[in-house]
Amino acid sequence: MGRILAIDYGKKRCGVAATDILRISANGLPTVDTPRLMDWLKEYCSREDVERILLGDPKQPNGAPSENLPRVRSFAGRIRKEFPDIPLEMVDERFTSVIAHREMIAGGFKKSDRQQKGRADEMSAVLILTDWLQSKSNFSI
Image (cartoon, rainbow, N blue to C red; front, side, top):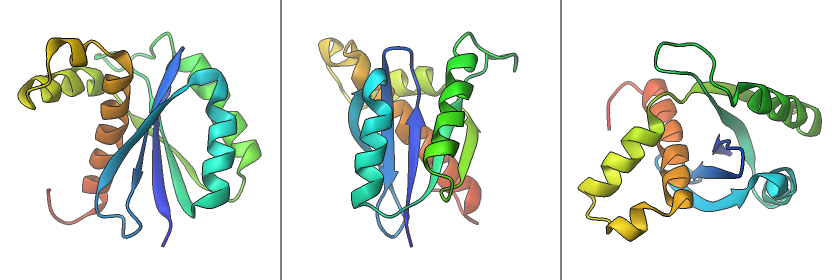
């Protein structure tokens, strides 16, 4: 059983999360600078068994595409070309950033920690992955 990898793709940096080998929990990985993301993915997939990649599909609250959509779709094409044997799934990422900030506040993160953009990106990737895992199970976590 391979890991599921989730990416919150951003203009400057990307949040990344992966399941454990049993695909029970979502764990945040260090944030990756966007220009380095494909090299990071190649390295990660060479040492880990990745069964599926989830890529956040950026939409506005009303469902309209966000300004980041063309960049995300372009990167999705690169993933499909580079990893033809790994299924890629676009996952609605609406509200993940807002929820990530709320979770940091609830978790007692200091204001200075919450202002670290990479931390919110990582948590957004974890939320994308957690939501996907919950949608595939018969119970809520």
